[in-house]
Image 1 (cartoon, rainbow, N blue to C red):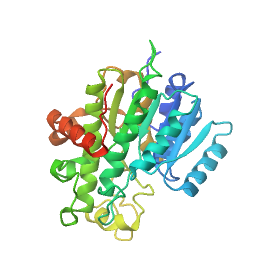
Image 2: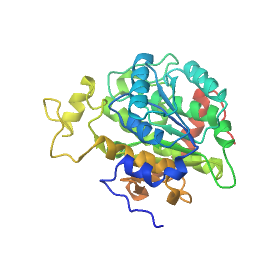
Image 3: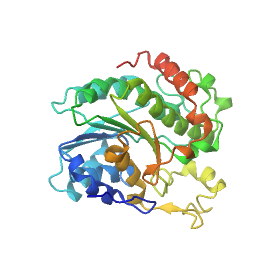
Image 4: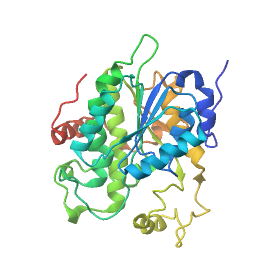
Length: 322
């Protein structure tokens, strides 16, 4: 049977139904699954078929709301909450140890969590919070879970790691490698740092694919512009109004090509399960298809990807090997 052609209007529901057989029996971990977000929507449709969906959040109360909503929407779904604060290495280690103690294998890791906008803030480890959430925390988390992911490999299956990036990576000059370990408030720009964080997602995916030597399939993606909880945060309003995404009153600008929540999560589910991507590890997806030509040069540079990996290893204090 031929597979359907996906497009900008494809929904996560449609993608999950198409690859239901690939999802069945799989255990999937998705970071950042607050209500009214694409991580939650991805979890919702995957939970209809998967053996286990692990959802995460740094706020236990909000995480509980997501868990209850998922179980209500998908009766019988096997959903397990995991408290995860990506801005703390200690918290990441604790969460990873919990996952590694689960009796089930781990087949797919979706790095979806984001810390967008706001004033300059350092984490408990002395790192800028947006980059900590997008790069340093996920790097350590992925590194610590890699053995569990690799253990799910078989003659017919290769584990996947997905990174939810954004077209916003194009809106800046790329990752400032010299400013990662010792970020300065005077060099901080909210929107610019967010652009760097999304660039880091793409570089991490490509380098993970390269260094794993085919043992892990890694992908990054642009989900589209969706009116999620992130866009509704007050501290993001000014930047989003300036670029025309939002109206001055904070509502979506109808002139901008917004997607529905279902359309927004579709590319995430595609990256996690579409069998047509098997030989395209390291690719960047847009509207559910490979779109490497849309990656800005600074985020496609192999040397930059290598340097970011090496610097991140130094920051987290661990080597990521296979």
